[in-house]
Image (cartoon, rainbow, N blue to C red; front, top):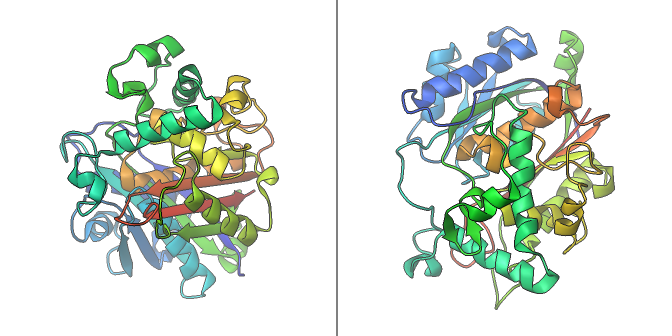
Length: 380
């Protein structure tokens, strides 16, 4: 396959921005990515915009504010994977030779959009009887505890680690660290999950500029990072009962990404993983093959997933610490990996990082195990 490179990235500070419309957030991220790439914005030939709740032609509203109006733009919606899918679609356009320079944008303004917990799809059987996403993950936490002996304290360590990492990230929503006791004593949400086990309501945007080999050579781009794999899978039909402590959709997507990149999980130096809840990080790093199934909580306790550990997970702070503006999340993961692989991550820098992996999983539809799962692999 033709190589795809990321030459510029940008993102806003994630958090609550009630006074700023989503177009302003998207514009800020796009303009920063253009400056970072050091290119004339007229070189951008097409764009893909990931979002969930921002209404019709949201991406076009950003193009109008950035001077990019007139180029082809596709709005992408795939629940929490929307931004990651926008990156994948941009990469496919470059690989196909359709365009040489493509913008991938993810954005979301959730403040005031909804009250209460998100639910699965409206036609989902569990939704009809009151199921919410925190309840789904609470059950998954209970199942992991039952099958592998995971303790409540070990789950709390996910939030402790990620909020500690977020305190080193000026773009993160949360800048304060928390202790295990503070996690365990925070407000109950869905037993055993508490407030600090759950990702917050967030606003924000992130952008990346992707290009072809020819453009990288012509521009002499500063520290380009190669997008070695961009895999996407949807859930398979569920037949009978399955273990809630294992994620087949993550396993399948990871296998496709590793094959594309020509590497295995042992080659990964750091990972940005979709930790919408503390248990979600556990399930996903195990599903990705980064840690053995059932062993991540113990390895986490040993410090193996810390920034200075064997395989740092969510050095950005993850969704628990950095925030989770749905459509922006997948692109923000790529932004973090680019900065890490360039050596530009400051106090949260992972030493000698060469291979980074980003995982997103979004949504649920009736009858299938998950709606969308993406794995992007970047190589310095």
